[in-house]
Length: 114
Image (cartoon, rainbow, N blue to C red; front, side, top):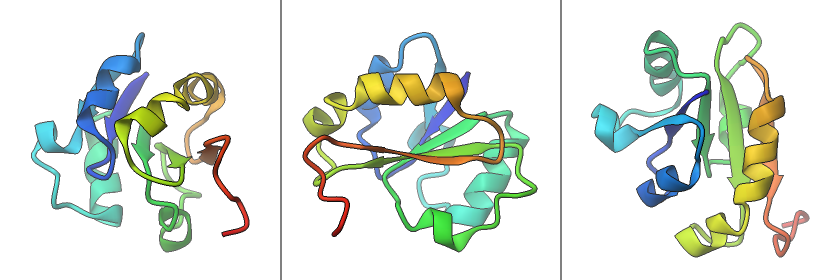
């Protein structure tokens, strides 16, 4: 699977997504590109999934016609150590996610109400 790490995630997360072809928005020169344009660029470059911490993306875009999926990592902070605690759940969702889907993974200590 070809995964794009959004700029709001630590780029070192890439090394923990074994078995996938992973690039960061920084590596692609897209660090300042946002939402709709980022989705267009990622789709054109053949990415299957954008991995992000931006929970609002699901409300900002229409994904019904998209060939790319979004996986949102929901945690109480954006630290690498926190996200690494979620890596098994992320890997599981990556085996299930399909084009046009938006899925979320939650850190075990994340308050889903807030």
